[in-house]
Image (cartoon, rainbow, N blue to C red; front, side, top):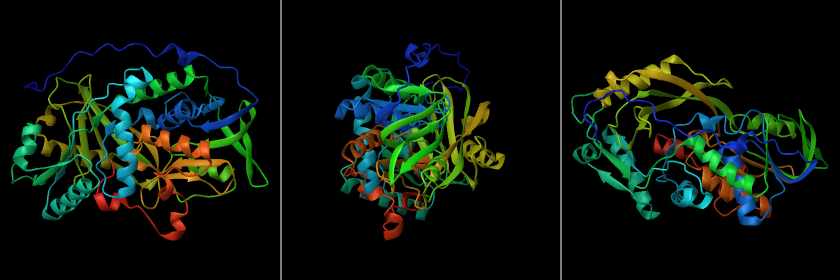
Length: 413
């Protein structure tokens, strides 16, 4: 681990894969249309082809492949969630992450460098230890660290008891980590493309045709495309799509902000999160510090957010990590996320026959990418909820069986 925080030269990366520029011949009809060529949509297409042999699939993307939230996340991967439902699907996802590069034959810079979540008060300690013991019950790897142990993992931590947010302990999942978001999308896309899936960029869905309660296909700027089944996987815009099909869903769209520094020598080889401060940070493979904050407090489709959110985030980060005060901000951005009332995903069937929904992941979408795609593909292929998805159905908003991971854990990243 390097000592001083110094600038680093830009690392050279290969160009985009050639297949991204191919334009497949758009068919008039498909077995399955997936709306949204982000991580979840591409993973779903891949697992439909791999696990079920369903290759007559089109993934439609309004913009360019992985140009939405997949290009605007902070790449954190972990499975140490509190509730059984969350632990189940995220642990399934993490197990898939661990062999994903070898499976699809594509570099994703997956790095199991560990994820640490800090506690700053007595109440915070109790909440994090509750999470720790729940993980133990679900056989998910987790550790409880004292401030001194936390500093051994991340020497740049400030564990003084005189700061505004003193570190009183932390949970730690060693199997957690990061991956390079766009390369994850390219890996899934290439693997799906190799098996015959059509990836259609620049194809905006303008309507969803429903006849006698059953989906028939989609209207697009390229014309009508018939389909036996249609799967929604467009983060931030799901409620717009469901209204095209004639029903509403309890989702709000909000901006989630993040930022990166200039390229620096490596000083942090783990991921650190703070629910009380609501800041999280990792250092990417090229050297930039990647930081994220919470969602803005108002609904919006814009990919930018309020400056006050970033100001609070940076002030807290510089107190937890004094060395960061010497870094320079390179750029900030915002992605639009769908948030359900309990801040947990909606995954499964809809009131329209053969129309499926995968949305509402809020701030947890990236880490769920493999597990979400696997479970969604199974649900679509069998026209029935996968076991890991059955509690994430729309029905929970009428039965009251909510999965309030955000409220329980204090942070859902």
